[in-house]
Image (tube, rainbow, N blue to C red):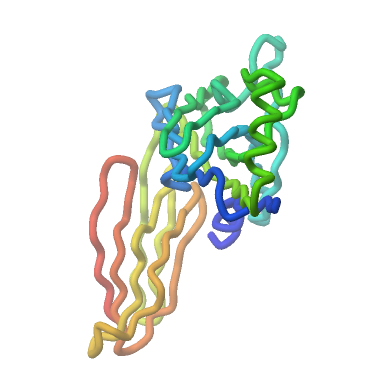
Length: 246
């Protein structure tokens, strides 16, 4: 599951001022249920100037050995539409202390689960970027940013598209030295707010983590004496709290 965490994107683009746009995309993991085809993703700008944001999408493909690679989204066989995820609009103009939304639309078969990386990249608008601004507005924006040191930070989210007939089947094996959860269903299961703490001291805890168990994969950890493990097992809309002692 560490590989899945690695696909979370973060990029930093630095120019020269301590002011400018500052975007926030909220959650970095989003899920599209089997009966839905669209998802509204909001982008917030907590900065003091307008943010011009490009939305880029790549599909994440997992190999048999668990390694992942990212590829461009392809077109459907008839060439009339994309086979996968698209953003509408793919260019956002987010005012200072404001919010704009883009609708993530999935097109294609839903017989299996698919994964996408959605990048939100603030840019200085150029003519070829297709932002609905005039040449004068573009030049004015560049001059505004060049007045000091501006940091443009882009963020990436992982987007899970569940199959149409999502099925959950988590099998738990609680052995003396190990604890395992195998996902025998056909869609991702989430281990949320995983805590590893000492039974004697509530202050003696490892950092809280989040894990995704893809279909056919297993999440496991080694139980240690004197430790307690607490987490929430999330299967779609349903969830339950589990407590495990070492």
